[in-house]
Image (cartoon, rainbow, N blue to C red; front, side, top):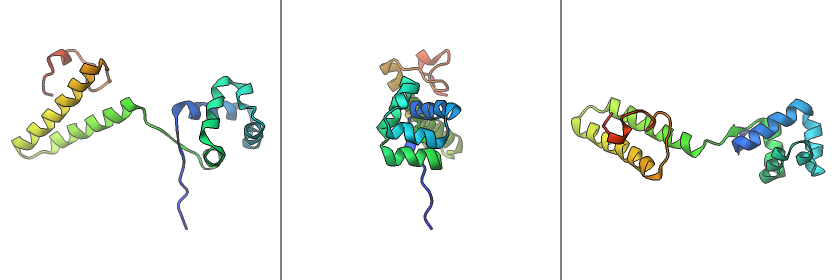
Length: 130
């Protein structure tokens, strides 16, 4: 027996499903999708047409996972680097993790992007090794 895979949808699409479910049953939502009336309820619901019918139904019936934002992906990667540093047993390995963490912070700084937990604290301008 195969495992049911939940489609990965955007945060905007997840919010649209939540709005619709406050007002309609799943059957009514499907009818509105088929009749191209989802955006009549709320213009933010039109994003559900980007899913395609099969993924739309799978998300409605089986549930869904919300796609991570780019910021969440970078934060997750940075946290893995921090964990790697904490587990490193040799000074050389710690140095590698410090350099990778610095590279992430400098890249974000060069792009003018602030991400909570990475480069949003005071003193980040000095790019100290934490």
